[in-house]
Image (cartoon, helix red, strand yellow):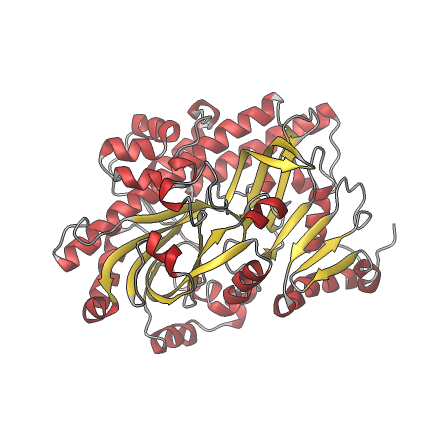
Length: 507
């Protein structure tokens, strides 16, 4: 089939309102449902440029697909419900775009689960910890605090954990999630209440995690890793909704918080890699056709599908233990600098969200309540007020959604809405979303310039690998404010609090 021009491609895409496009069936072969993606005018160019440059290529060298094409390909997967959704931070990823949400009907025997819809860093997520400190308490000791955090939390590509972990501990952590951290004294009971899924996927089975994955995961428990992962000391810059902020324990501008962004490290990556190999075999056996090799999948109820679900859940539990261990180390770092206990500093977890996960949830589809397997890759669950799966504290506000910015830019806390529940299966954005590839960032940006600019902004930085500074510089990403504003204006989540960084620790 001859490649379409950009103009021909755009005939399938219709702007429905200032914040959303729909993608008609026929945009890619075999679409079972339409697609849609949320972008406002300032973000539109980046998404469209991907499609424009793809249309200009005479042949698709290297298999690169623009995010909009990937949204279309996901809409062609068996058993998908309603539509394939792209959020404002959407950009090209492995199989699924990053920022893609898709739900599959558990009642349909043809419906599939796809590791590409979860991502390699299973349960990569963000946790926000509040304190009762104000910026004026921190500024005099800011450098010492940044160093203390850097000293306490192991960071970088090959970093190893300092919390003693034996093989038997790892097995139990994979099974129990945050309950392991609680039992071992690395978490507070209230932390569990303020985690998505209460910090534990109950269908986890450590036996479905390969010995190679466990070998990679054992030394890395309680480590930050590299890439876009960070621990950031932030201050409250704006409060958009005082009622919501107070429920979170945020009561004034200038209040200091800590944001931790990390996932399941090498263990999660290996679980995904192992599953992709198994699923290619399952596809051949069950004659499952996809538009893209990277969309390897298996029927949810097949042996391969169930094995992946159990292994992925164990990796998700590992990630919650990982973030809990780093929360423990963060509390220690603050206690050391301020010579006060973490309890006296009121270092409670506001919430912990996942943005790379697939979960069985109940949603209304065409007037019927259905059990769906919702894949969220680079997107965050955002349940509305009064939903039974969110903590008592947030029943009146809706689930907190932690949206991390990029190094040197602001972050946001949003809350879920009823409209989001109807339109996006209770999902919203996860961060800024890349605008430049890592390679382009390294080539286009200068290490010294980026550091100088962060210094001028009053941000202390501790980084294990200098080249990461360019990859994670603000220019490498979309504008997180526009991403959040699109979700707010589309009413799929609401802005509650804005935070700005004063110190960053990176891998």
